[in-house]
Image (tube, rainbow, N blue to C red; front, side):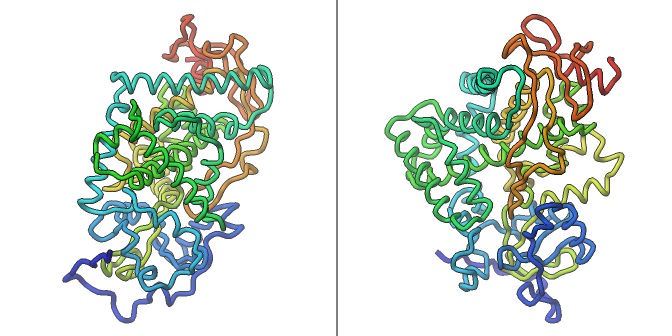
Length: 479
């Protein structure tokens, strides 16, 4: 089906303005970018301004760097479209046949729809997620209890396998299996999802040579799940999506589940690990909010420093439009960079904006504009991240990174910048999982094991849980 470009009595690009295809572009994904993406964003901004032409695996792309311009792209749906059929280079057959990032964009689902079609699909998602959003409904209460129970089980496995003192990768041994277990529960999967699903999602997002086959495998698994739940409906998201829109085919529902699996496992997982990292590496503002028992604010502050999606989904210009120092032609591809925008925001707001609780809500971890995560999904994702972060720290006496923070291995691809692993030396509470304990949360910083006063979170035995008490002693001198 052809997408008709909207008629527009708007200004067109001046004939002497450079077209994207005519500009010499440097490749974005280099060893320099792997080591220091923030430095690359800064250099591009210094050279080109708020918008820079870059090469992405051999394809020229406009990279949007500044917060104001990123928000403009995210919020103005009439100009910046999500439907890949608006992409001129694709429609003209000018893309490399094996361009690895195209596989994910060819999956026709809510993220890549516009206007009424997009609104209808969002309504289906919101209706299906609503029972799980509210902690007072049976479904919402059970899901919250299940996330906490799964977290405790995984921490218990650490104790069983390595003892109360040992070494662990909080990616492979905690965050990744936790999100897979939650997905299995929420989607109503008849069997546990395997780690291979996460690997396939990584392959698709990172644009590896097998991105196409990986996308096909993940889609196939989700389509089979849709058919299973159509035949055997249950109290799960898959069944509720069918209730919200009975006209969904197994293939359509499979594509929507595929999108949700990406967000639940990769994006939410990155947000968990990034928050854990900011605490472990000693980020003072993140620790301060955690010490006050403000887990949601802790996550916001970590997302501002290190968003779970570095460069967000492509947009395609519906018409010629000026952005930054360039004219973007209708049909051009644009990549809004959350990571670069956050760097810009922190540079602008340095002391009085970024340090405040209000400004941290400006992070783009959940997107912005018409295509931001639906409110039900944001609340659900926030609950999962907060629970995952809170439970692991509730059970730790001590935790420290076993590698310097600047030597941690990252997946630094065209979309996400996510930790490959988060290695720690830990000491679990001797009182057992679920009872809390004192915490030493330093990377070379001793905090001590006692309990602070007034931390606001107590265990069943009435004692203040260890992390919040210990951090309060560190951040506020024992107050």
